Length: 337
Image 1 (cartoon, helix red, strand yellow):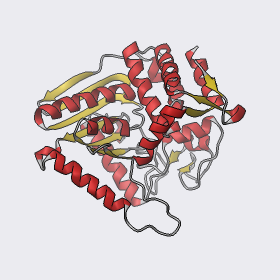
Image 2 (tube, helix red, strand yellow; image 1 turned 180 degrees about the vertical axis):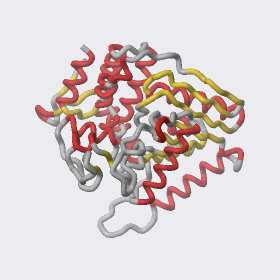
Image 3 (tube, helix red, strand yellow; image 1 turned 135 degrees about the vertical axis):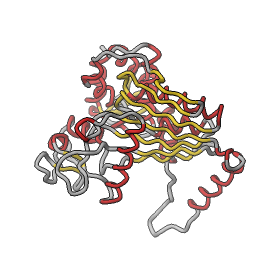
């Protein structure tokens, strides 16, 4: 494996995509995953890094390696209830980066056969960048809406105790040449960013978290002991609650009145059920062009479209390599050795 300290000096290192993938696979193999499983997990983490989301990228190797669930027994990812258009999947205590990849494959297979698919996953955790799965489905020609609830990390509006997950929702629409992807969490900050800030002793932005006493804090360790706030006041609060409730349909457990498990849901359909697929792609392209050509406010260089920057970064970093923090790279190397 080769790496360069250009251009970031002693605190940064440039790593090629191929080297980062090989390193990530080695870490996952040491964590007990098979060669095929490690390849799928590593490719997911690499893609997050390439797209410019470091908290969901190679740093997650450390999170997975340190998570107690990684050391627990796993059973094969399996379908426990099925119809021609639906599947409920037991993730077998596999990390979500693997279980949700398999769920997306099943959703694509069912949508190809019937034009529609509804797939739920439970008994899994740490799904990573949810845009990965909806992009996979959209590139297969289908529209996808994906929600993910988790164990509680987020304090409800006006509350003092965590009750919601960070509860992302993601959309994927087939386009030409690239799909239109939008992926957002309903928390004011991603928990993965809080974990990363805590590991490197960095301060959080104002107004995103509270400590164990329910008081505002910028200390990441205190936020992990306390909770994250929902984004957007009552709007984020309401959306997060609905995603948490949808997780129940995916099989998330509800002991003691609180969702304790992760629940992932995919709603997938062929746009050809409603309009000709090529017409949909053409009109989507026209809509994007119309939005981007809207007159801009002073000082605004470009009206951006969701996923546009990620696709650009992915292409650039595949050619130029990725700049990683040296301390992160060294930590991952230690896990792989």
